[in-house]
Length: 112
Image 1 (cartoon, rainbow, N blue to C red):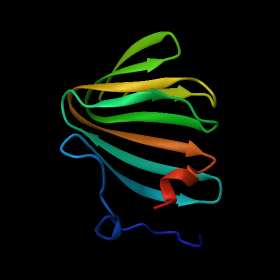
Image 2 (cartoon, rainbow, N blue to C red; image 1 turned 90 degrees about the vertical axis):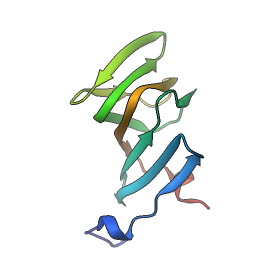
Image 3 (cartoon, rainbow, N blue to C red; image 1 turned 135 degrees about the vertical axis):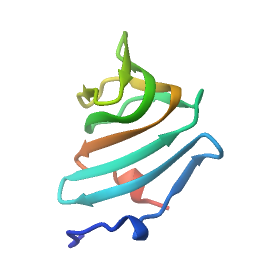
């Protein structure tokens, strides 16, 4: 994809779970992707794993982040790193937004 600018007005808000989880692919190209995920209180990002490296930054709200056998509380300004192949998931404790960066890109997010 040969794109440099990703204006918000052109980005699709994709429903992951109605009334609970939505996301926007903020930027992508080369081997990297940035995704904003919006959560309602109590919403769960089910535990899963993937080969991609991931960094998650908390933009808003409060979350319980499960990383392997550990549990962390993420608040505004906190970042967590997930190596490829590590099982992880999240529960939203207070309405919020996470910014996920993946490398390589999540091709599964692009298939519709």
